[in-house]
Length: 91
Image (cartoon, rainbow, N blue to C red):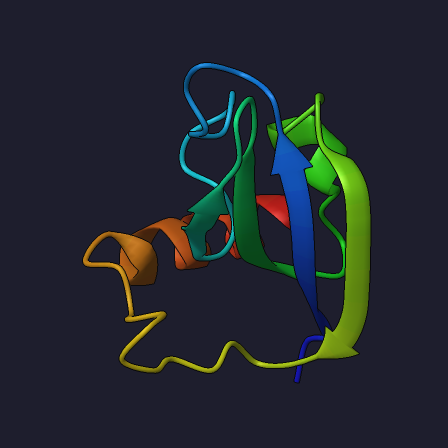
């Protein structure tokens, strides 16, 4: 089983979506401040958050996985095909 990381970070861009699409794992906007968004993202170990959110700051990560979906962090509709494509490309 692939190693996954759960990341929590801030981004100060106007649009909090990743600069590369699709990301290799799910992400959600968890909150916002006066000039930033708080994001949660799950990524397989072989991918770097900075490739998708180069402006990420206050980055916290924990080794976990695979992603855990909840009412607050539901499984995105696009995730199955995108994760499989990214993992195959990363091999």
